[in-house]
Image 1 (cartoon, rainbow, N blue to C red):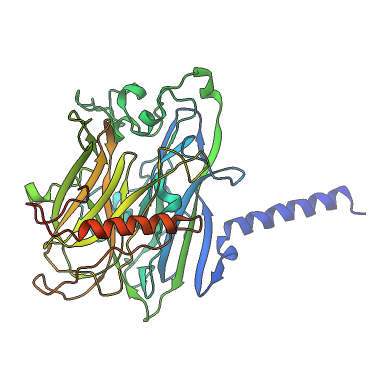
Image 2 (cartoon, rainbow, N blue to C red):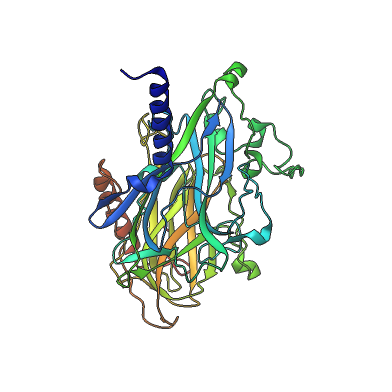
Amino acid sequence: MMSNSTQGLVFTLAIAILAICAQNSEARVTLENGVKSMVYLSPKITQHPGSVSNKFYYDIEFPKGHIALKSFNAEVVDEAGDSVPLHETYLHHWVAVRYYQRKGVTNVKYNGKLGFQQSDFIMTGNAGVCNHGLSQFFGLGSETRKTSTYVPDPYGIEVGNPLEIPVGYEEKWLLNIHAIDTRGAVDPMGCTECRCKLYNVTDDEYGRPLNANYEGGLNCCYDGTQCKVKNELEKSVTRNLYLRYTVKWVDWSDSIVPVKIFIFDVTDTWQNTGINDCLIEFNVEQSTTGAANISTRRSSVSFPTAGDVVYGVAHLHSGGINSALFGQDGRIICSSRSIYGEGNSAGDEAGYIVGMTACYPEPGSVKIGKGEILTLESNYSSAKSHTGVMGLFYILVAESSLAVNNPVHIHQETMVPVFVWGIAVFGFAILVAVVVAYRRKKQTEDGYQSISS
């Protein structure tokens, strides 16, 4: 039998070994059909009923080396690893951003603010088209569980290329997680839409007074704010949550075709100002006619490069119906529709968007020319008003030398099963409806057919 001192030494060594293994996440990498996969947890998110967490977490765990990213999926879980439903904690959004940090600089603060000199930090961002505010490589919201982010073969998002990393810097990743706890809320949906009156907020997070006409949005539900709950005592009940994210990748090789990430915003001002200022959020006014109860918003931009579209998906908030990206000649580049939950369990929450359909065109079938004018359309229900909603659209493009006046292929939207829980049947029904709608010959005065008609 071991002595007490020996037992204590063994116990101490065991804890040390476990700590080392916990830090060495690469030891738990799985391999399937040549694709590596790793599951990570974000730093702890502590919440109580009505609370808001909207922090930036720097230097998160992420695969190392010169690789091709194949997907990035995420969801909110509790300390037991169980999925947390949206009607308890609403995932407003999460984004994953790549950056370069000067080697040897470690004074990063985890309070939502940069904790080092600007010269020590270089944001790499995606390929555009917005000038600021939308620099993420990946990012979704409430729809995260049932939205496919997989990059099809032979394509991949190239990261970790040592030739691209500035001398003296190293590549790192950050997460921004915006989670709103709506347990016991007086108006749960109002909390998710960041309605200012529910947060009793009159200044933004920087102490600047809000415009009197600002009804709701990100400026009212920043980190540390509190949405109104029924029982004030509930604020003392806290729990710890995490964003569990799964990254899939392959080692980089010459056989992989690199793709670039482009994000469009229906609030982009380019068509009026010539500058890609993306306002990110907007409001939907309640319809007073009682007719179609659909609010449509559009924006147009000039595409900066040329290439083949290999993937596309929209990001909408509750009330969102569908969104589509149109080419200059009115063809559909990709359309994406909201999937709403019908139950109470995580991933099927009634009243919430739990997924978005994605486009996977046949390779080479959907082309965009350099300088081509693209139009983004987002449709929301206007049966009631909505504040702080978004209308974003992600596409992945394999670049080419295609000119704007070259022939382009008109395609029908292609769908893939998002996950194994039966979305395929629903997706096929949506596909048929979309194809029929877009085969109508009549075009609108804007040069394309509205997806809401």
